[in-house]
Amino acid sequence: MNQEREIYTVSEFTRAIKFVLEEDFPDVWVEGEISNFRVPNSGHAYFTLKDKNSQLKVVLFKLNKRLLKFEPEDGLHLIVRGRISVYEPRGEYQLIADYMEPKGIGALQLAFEQLKEKLFKEGLFDEAHKIPIPQFPQKIAIVTSPTGAAIRDMLRIIDRRFSNVHIIIYSVKVQGEGASVEIARAIKELNELSHGKLVKHGEPAEPIDVMIVGRGGGSIEDLWAFNEEVVARAIYDSKIPVISAVGHEIDYTIADFVADLRAPTPSAAAELVVRDRKEVVQNIIGLEKRLINSIQNMVDILRSGLTGLQERRVLKSPLDKIYELQQKIDDIGLRVRRSPLLIYKKFTEKTFHLSRSLFILNPMIKIERSKEILSELSKGLATTIDHRMEIFDKRLKGVLGKLDALSPLAVMERGYSICRRLPDLKIIKDESEVEKGGHVNVRLHRGELICQIEEQKP
Amino acid sequence: MSEIKFEKALKRLEEIVEKLERGDLDLDKSLEIFEEGIKMSRICSQKLKEAEKKIEILTKDESGRLKAEPFEPSPETEEPSEK
Image (cartoon, rainbow over all chains, first blue to last red; front, side):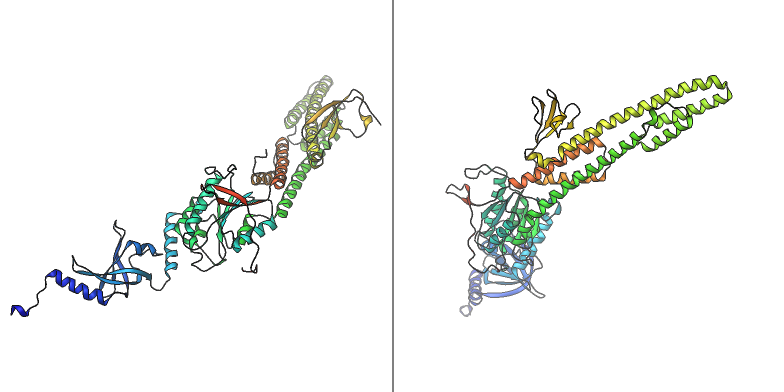
C-alpha cells in the first residue's frame, strides 16, 4: 500500500509546484489595482495587485523600478508584465514584475502629473520664490543645443531688437539619455560662474543677468528632459532668474512651472528678455522732456509770482490813509503764499485801537502819534516784504542759474560752455559786457572755471 | 556713478518725473531731484551706448575648466519656417 503512495516532502512538493508554475507562466500580463505598496531598505518594491475577488503578490526589483517613469502608489490601476515565481521558504507564489504601466493614461503623462503634484507640495512653484526678470539684461546665458533651430531663432531676434548684449551659450544635449543631468549641471555652473565661484578660462567672473533654458518643439519624449526632477531643482536653486522656453506654445513642462518666467517658445523668450532698442531710447527721451518741462513750469509759476509781488511795491511810499494801507495789506495777504498774515492781523488790531482812541480821546495829539506808529508799522511791513522778495529773488536766480546750467546739457557735453560775468552771473554774449581785469565764471560740461579778463577783442 | 544699473537709473528717472509732475515739492527739493533726474537720464543713455555685442559659447577644456569662445550660429540648412 505504502509503495503506491507517492509521498513528497514539503520542499520537494514546493519545488514541483515551482517548476510547473514557472514553466507555464514565464511571461504574463496582469491587470489590477495596487495596494499595500512598500519599498524597504533593499530598494525593491513589494505590493499586492488585486481586483474584486483575488489578490496577487508582486515584487518589482530595484533595477526595474528605476526604469519606471512614474511612481507606483496605492490605488493606482496597473497593467503589469512579469513572470510567476514561487518563493520556496514560504510556499508562496508571486509575480516578478519587469515592466508596468498605468492603465488608461500614458506612463509619461502620469509621471508628469505625479512630479508636478510633488514639487507643487514642496513649494517649488511658489510665486514668492520667483525672481523678477530684469528689464534690460546686459548679459544673457542660454542653455540649449548650439545646433538647434531654437538658438538660431533666439539670436536672430535678439540681434534685430537690440544687438548690444552679451550672450553666453552653454551647450547641452536637450534630449535623450543624460540630457536632464547636463541641463541641470549647466544651470548650476552658470550660477557659479556668475557668482565668481567658477573662474572662466582667462577671464574674471562676471554676473549673468538672466538665463534662458529651452529647446525647440518635439514630441513629449523629446521634451522629456525638461520634465525631470533634477532640472526642476536646478532651476529652483538658481540665483540667476530663469526663463523656460520649451517647445511650442501648447507644451507645458515641469521646467515651465518652476521657472521664474515661462516663455511659450524660444523666440518668445528672446522677445521677452530683450526690449526693442528704439522703444527704450524713445522712452528715455520722453522722460527727459517731461523732466525739463516740469521744472520749467515750476520756474514759470515762481517767476510770475515774483512779478506780481514787484508790482505791489508801492507800499514803500509813505502812507497817509489807513484804508489804503489796509487794502494793500489785504491784497498782499491774498497773493503771497505764507503771506505775512501775522503782521496783517497785528496791524488791523492796532489800527482798530488807534482809530478808536482817535475819536474817543484827544484827536489831534492822537492823530499825530498814530501817524507815527503807522509809519513805523508800514515801514516794518515794507521791510518784511522787501526782505521776503529778496530771498525769493535770490532763490529764483539760483533756480534759473541751475536750470540754465543744466538744460543745455547736450550742447555742453559737446564742448560748449557758458560764460557768466561775476559777480552778477549775467550770461555774456558780447565782449563789451565785461571789463579788462574783471572776472567771469565759465561753466563747462563738468565743473566751472573762474577766469580773469586779460584782453578784449571786438 | 556708472555703477548704477541701467534699470535702476531708469526706474529712478521715472519716479523723479512723476514726483516733479505732481508738483507738490518745494523748490529746493524739486531742484535737487531735477538734477538727479538729469544724471539718471545721462546714465541711461550712456549705458545704452556702452553695452557691447558679444556672442560666446562655453566649452570645457581638458581640465574641466570652462572657457568662452566666440560663437557663430550654424548656417541654416533647412527651411527657416520649421516653427
